[in-house]
Length: 311
Length: 218
Ligand SMILES: Nc1ncnc2c1ncn2[C@@H]1O[C@H](COP(=O)(O)OP(=O)(O)O)[C@@H](O)[C@H]1O
Ligand SMILES: [Mg+2]
Image (cartoon, rainbow over all chains, first blue to last red; front, side, top):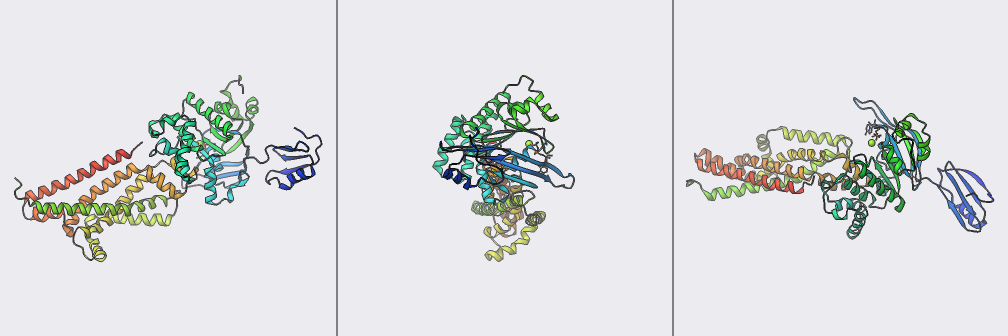
């Protein structure tokens, strides 16, 4: 959508939030404005109709030049888990991170919620630099970022319902609110009937559903999935992926997911980053990457999917 | 049969032993639990890494565990005199018993806590839990079965220790078994006292196992 008479065009870096004066300018002077925010997109404002569309102004997550080194220990050499990673995740994305074991995928994900601190580089989540957050602020942020794991990491000592209640307890919610919310969540993931079971009594897929309900408890804006389907059989994988997709679409929760299976990316992601030894070797829209893989690793990953790929 | 047994003495001795063991188990847990938690969370890469505290605690625990119990009791009796004015009787005996058993229990707490899945801890971190919540609702809650087993083992050990402590002034079944039973050639008394000690151990073990099984949902 291009305004008929663009009045001003300015180059603008996405590191700085859009100043409010610009909107005032649009409101009061009734100018048409096209603000180009490299490399993302444009803000388009139209007079008269009093309508403006802001797309992709600030990416939800912006990682710039992030490097993570694990210092050498007695026997082990220094590990460079991430090497100058730059990427953006936009609101609403289902962002796939693919790569072989040891490529640095988990480290990248853990950087997003501050479980790991980068050696250098900056991470902005929701426009905020997470490096400057205090411990308390970081914990509050984490309450708004759900995470699920390959091995679920549920509490054995708690029932299904108590597991889902845990993040709500952390957030200091009142008892009746916890009761109401856990019921809602367990009904949503289809496990209300098993609310009093212990995790050990559940199948893998059911455990992951509990993990998802738990991750959603505090209304996160972002869901991190670390190989969430890698321990599941194909059918269960499909149903879990379906659930993640619904969550993304219905609740507008952005998803970043790690996998070593391109079929998972194919099934639900719109963007994908391919990693090898700490670097992103390929990054882009899933369809684009699948149609025309550039890097050797990407080719190997996409091979198995066959040419008859449809998205 | 058993006509040489002075049941009044046996009954009193049983009560003394139960009192010694009960109180010292309670205080051992109260003292050893935080000690064990501290040992774990101050370790490298854990919740509250602090090498100075970790190393010093480890040394203290090891010293106390290295000294044979009977020697420790003898060394610690003056402490009872200092704290409660006497080194005689079951109450006085609980002090050396507790001091001797707490480091032992702390190590068991440490082992139990280390068995908690690292991934579960990470999940709690990812949910934004603070340290206190993680200790209480993840570390301690998740290690409950091992913790109960630890308390059981400690309690059983304390029953054994209490017999020693009884001999050097604490009273109780150990004392009666030695003085009335062994030294006065009253084999029946010796036997009855031993039997009651074994029975107490057995009951404690049963109860411990039952609770441990009940809280174990793995
Ligand atoms: N805490 C750590 N200490 C030292 N090395 C680590 C640590 N965590 C990860 N690594 C190393 O960083 C690299 C990337 O690990 P990871 O992000 O887990 O890879 P992936 O998830 O892609 O399998 C690996 O070589 C791994 O050994
Ligand atoms: Mg990984």
